[in-house]
Image 1: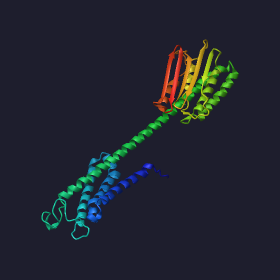
Image 2: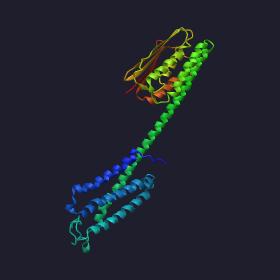
Image 3: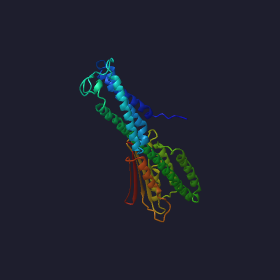
Image 4: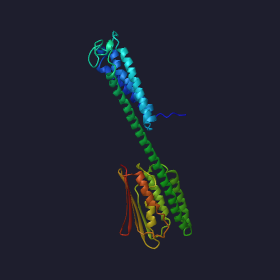
Length: 364
C-alpha cells in the first residue's frame, strides 16, 4: 500500500515545531537564566508553555473533532475542565518543590502579591499563598489554547471543505464537458451522413470522395479532440476538410469563400471543436436549391485573440424542417461558458438578409 505524502502533511509539523521552538527560546533571549535562575525560567516560562501545548494538542488532535464539532459539548467541556484541573494541581506541586528554601537557583524570595517567604501574611509556616491568586493566574491562560485549538481546527476544516467542494466542481465540469463533446460528435456525424446520402444517387464519385474526407475527420474527432487543448493549425485543417466535404454537394449557385490564416509556424492552442458549430450552422441556413447564395468564412489570429466570422445568405428553416436538430449553437454556448468564462464573445445577427455570426476567444 502506497502512503501519499502531500506538501501540507510535511509543512504542518514543521510550522508547529518552528512556532513552539520560537516560544521556548524567546524567554532565554529576553531574560537570561543567570539573572533569575534556571528554576525560575522553568516555572514561570517553560512550564506554562508545556501545559499550553498539552491542552492545545489534545483539543486539536482529539477532542475538537470527536466532541466539539459533533455537538457533544457536555463531554467536551467536562474533559477540558478535568484536564485543566489536573494541570493546576500539577502546578501547585511543581511550584512548591521549586520554592523550597535553600535550593540553589530557586525562585527568588519575592512572591507576586507582596511579602517574603517565612513572613506573616502568607499562611502560617512560611509557605507561599498557592490558593486563589495562583489558581486564577493559571486558570485563564489555560483556557486560551482550548479556544485557539478550536479556531485552528475550524479553519482547517473550512479550507478542506472548500478544497473538496472545488474538486467536486472540477469533476462536474469535466463530466459536463465530456457530455457536450459526446453530444457534438454524433450531431456532426449525422449531418455529414445526410450530406453523403444526398450524393450517392446524384454523384457516386463525389460520395466516395466525401466518405474518404469523413473518415479523416472522424479520425481527428476520435484521436485528437480528447485533449484539453489542440493546436489551432490542427483545428483549421479540420475546418477546411469539413468545408470541402460540404462543398461536394453544392450546386453552381452556391459560392463559398474561405479566408483562413496560415499559422503552421506559429503555436496557438485552443479547445477542440469550438468553431465547427458556426461552420455547420452557415451551411444549414445558407443553402438554397433554387436561389443564389454566398457563404463566407474568415479568421483573424494574433497574440491576443482568435476571431472567426461567418456570413451566409439567410434562408431560415421552417418549423417542419427536421434537417437540423438545433443543438449546435446551444452546445457551443455551454462549452464557451465552461471553457472560456469571461474570455469569449459570441454574436449572431441578421443584417440585409445576411446571417452573421462571430466568435472571439481571448488568449489573455
